[in-house]
Length: 125
Image 1 (cartoon, rainbow, N blue to C red):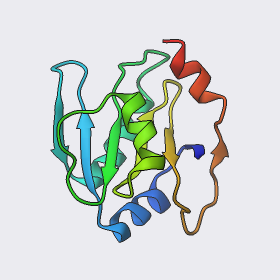
Image 2 (cartoon, rainbow, N blue to C red):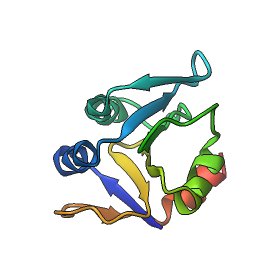
Image 3 (spheres, rainbow, N blue to C red):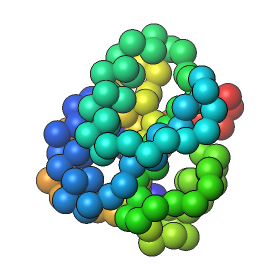
Image 4 (cartoon, helix red, strand yellow):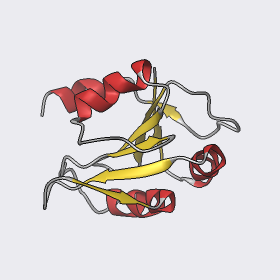
């Protein structure tokens, strides 16, 4: 599994749009999930720059086709390797940027930094 951190989202957004995925966003403030627009990943990035070290526990799942029910982060992460439908799980990083978890290659991959360390931080919450 690739775990990457990204400070811009143009290539990431192009990749998700090319795949034709559906976007599902968790919302820790109201609970539950909502289906959204893939382009909202830009808003996630902008909001990550305002977190200042505070993790809200939100994340997004990008899937080919719909997902049923709700998934915890751990369930979503496990689904990456076990479900052909779930393409990526994206989390706003508390110090700005997006953490991207995926099993799929991202064409035009550049300006990404490895963030394997991030999973250990997330698990300690």
